[in-house]
Length: 139
Length: 109
Image 1 (cartoon, rainbow over the protein chains, first blue to last red):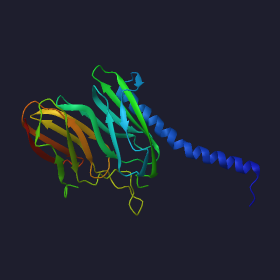
Image 2: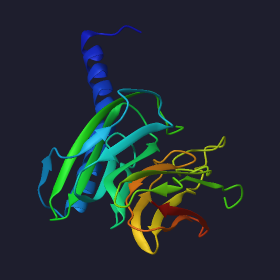
Image 3: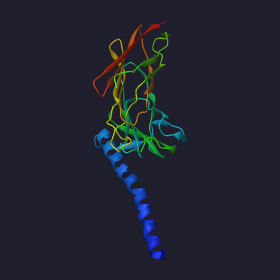
Image 4: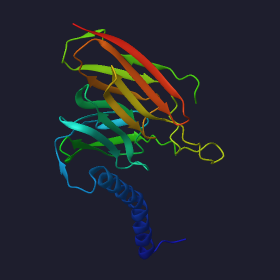
């Protein structure tokens, strides 16, 4: 079977759509979660520090830390996971700081998004990009 | 998955009043995410610890809502700040209704 120029173009376009479609779908999920967390209010960038490795060899355990001085709660989202929610921290009166660390699973190379809700109700956002060599969703 | 669950917590023995210090917690748990399939292509049902709570003398330090994206043997590290001696209590709530607890005493001074 011979490929014409047209066939090649169509296949290329199909492959591109197949590659980007799921990522788009996950991006919508992130927006939904953001809206829910912010109660539909505005989200401003900055004020939240997300620490994650630039390159994670194993997506099954990726150490992440979030810190947002003055935050009452922090929601961590993974933009490229089938279910973007990772963890939601709530800080009580005995918390020493509005920061916490954990280890998460990442399906592939993507952004970690941390949303921090401040005491006055405003929501701040911080992101960190992580390259994942081996995904952690066991697909 | 109520067997072989062992919480481990590291809290300093003493702390200065009003100064933040680190607490590290780890609990052994498979954290089956509900996204994996077994050899026959059937989805393995989700079985995770969905909530973690740390209190000090009845006052809340931190709560965490865990999702399927948290790794096996969930590790959580955070900071606390206390004014008097007392006891930290740690609670993990499992999807299957099990509750795992641990506690640690700390002295101020």
